[in-house]
Length: 216
Ligand SMILES: Nc1nc2c(ncn2[C@@H]2O[C@H](COP(=O)(O)OP(=O)(O)OP(=O)(O)O)[C@@H](O)[C@H]2O)c(=O)[nH]1
Ligand SMILES: [Mg+2]
Ligand SMILES: [Zn+2]
Image (tube, rainbow, N blue to C red; front, side, top):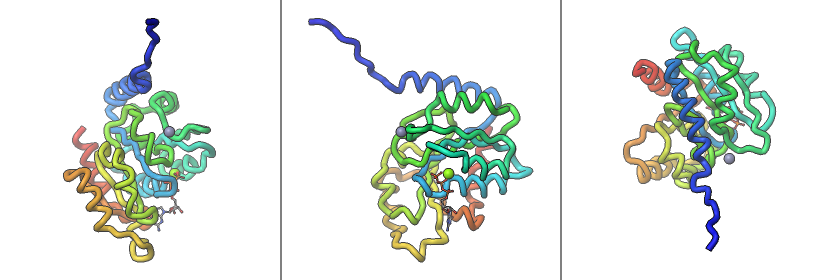
């Protein structure tokens, strides 16, 4: 019988480029965060507040992915000099090659922290290694309390989980205990930080970030 070639790992090429990215990030001494969350969960708002809080404490840059527009990049460039916007078109996630191209537009040696705001999507960004040091999963109370249970891969892959828009908790029907229970069911050990990005309530998150920088 004739044998046909089988592509066993469609992510293999991505993983190879991610490895190159990771090596380059390590050489530059930059800690890299892949921020994953649904559209509108507050990824850019969190980065705006985070960059503001890090001024004078840590040199940060951002790669931000969106299907279209540079609106997030324009918001973020107010708070840090090194920002690159990647437009993914029909693509619903960032891949290692796009990050590699964006890196070429940054001076990573001048950074302590690099945030990658992934395309708003809770599914495929989880599967694409970008060369990051940590994956951060962002949920918000306005999305519904079932999102962690519905997206176990993000919960399982994340180094830390964030729950944003806590200021809206009393105005929406979000069962916080149920949300946290779903997470504990999947991952007993993962740290969950509650915050409100637009209210500047993010001290615990900033401590976590600074502890990562120091670890390096
Ligand atoms: N009340 C409240 N609103 C918030 C908070 N964080 C973000 N928002 C609002 O939520 C909306 C979406 O925020 P963005 O930061 O644009 O969300 P995003 O995840 O970057 O969205 P995409 O990039 O489109 O996927 C904006 O109107 C924000 O002002 C919060 O902590 N509290
Ligand atoms: Mg955004
Ligand atoms: Zn995708």
